[in-house]
Length: 294
Image (cartoon, rainbow, N blue to C red; front, side, top):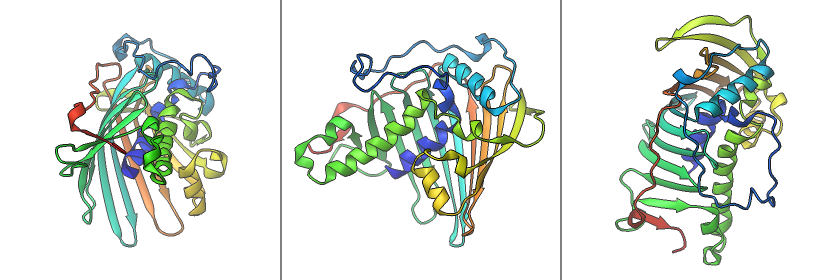
């Protein structure tokens, strides 16, 4: 589960700007918040049908434009590669995902391949309607049930005892990450950053793009969650990043790198494809799912 939440955080770093429009968000007790958690799915808009946009020269206004375009497209396919280095060796993880950036609540389907020589494995996850389904290749939660379901409703089961708090924490972390798809915290790294030089023109997988380089001080990301807190504790002062945008204002690639005084280095590269195309996010069969506490 820790692997799932970490990957979601990375995937949504850029597409998390989908809701950065400054609109007022309903409170927890508002009528909108009390509606059914069944996902609302507006039809996506293929990128070819989106209007071209002018890309602002400042990080904040640029993020606002990206946010609107990401929401308008509504869907995307993503490939993420994360590499890490430390004194004890290196690791690599590759994730392929489909995302609905216009669903409420947001939805995702992921396949995560961990190439850690000590603990390799493949994890699948589906997030829809506020419920998380996950499974690890080659493992069963119960005989004939390779999937496990995690939700706030499951965590309220009194029979779980102390484990309920742990389950609630897991759900909180995923919900917080997915919530970045419809809140002003999306694209916070870029919004709080400073551009390094002027943007340049580059081609990414056949598409003409504008390449923006910049850095963001971790001190400017206060309130950004446990990930930022952990980086600060490790002595990380800033994050270096590069963002490629096409003429529709849609991300085509995002790369970020960080290095701590302890010698730990992490590099993430995210490629975004097929904005606005149809995606297939499907929950596993009920008879293959173990419900915790059942």
